[in-house]
Image 1 (spheres, rainbow, N blue to C red):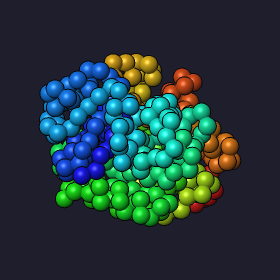
Image 2: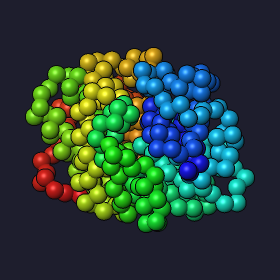
Image 3: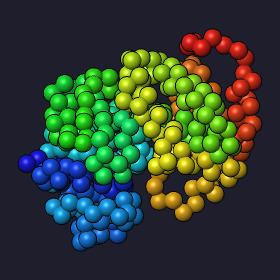
Image 4: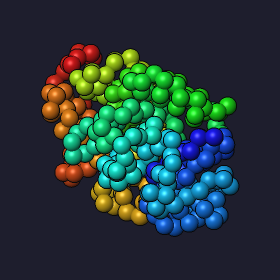
Length: 332
């Protein structure tokens, strides 16, 4: 039995905590929201982020980070990307040695423009960090629908350890050595998913969606290569697989947000009343800044950011993308 702390009580953190607890691991889920922690502990439910899904009776929950982290051998970092720095700095404060860290959040650090594994590596002073990513809607994983994911780490033994820890008969986990590529694929696909939702919201059809997804993958790959990732990574689960899922699936928060924007709502109107985070909003701005830093053109990300933060309409953004200077399909 492994003692595991899952830091983040959203849908994905809760689903992974439930998966691990049902495998017989000793799991404590940390949630920022007192009502979430209380309901998980007393009723074995998370009605806020994973409604209607009974959780493993052995799963414990708390709002006390120190309590969640006590004697943890593995820590799963599942907070929203913008909160990872603050939450994990507090969680890991005062340590001279560190447990195995598994990052499952799909985003980028907005202040430093770095990946979350790099951020966690700084917090732990260089301790190895594994990244779990891929096409994984939380609800479908919870329902034991066959799912494949990938865990990336520079330390091969850590990747194998995490692979064995999470793998079940319905959750197949592959190992990978390209941490940068796996992490960028998981983060940047959210921006393209927002754009795909906008296409659907405007009322365009399958031709437009297919073009958007394909050119979005090219955009992700260009930036990934500039940051040192392996090109083939983006043809795998953490790249193309996750992009297809998030850009087309009805369970995608980013796609759903894009649909509302495509129908003419403002960002504030589209986000009103929603508990869950659409990571593509913050990542759009971060991706554009990264592209500028590394002189990589990201036309779709730039248009998404203009719609989100500058009041541009989705129809005008699509027109501007279509009317750009002609280029060969493969370019950098």
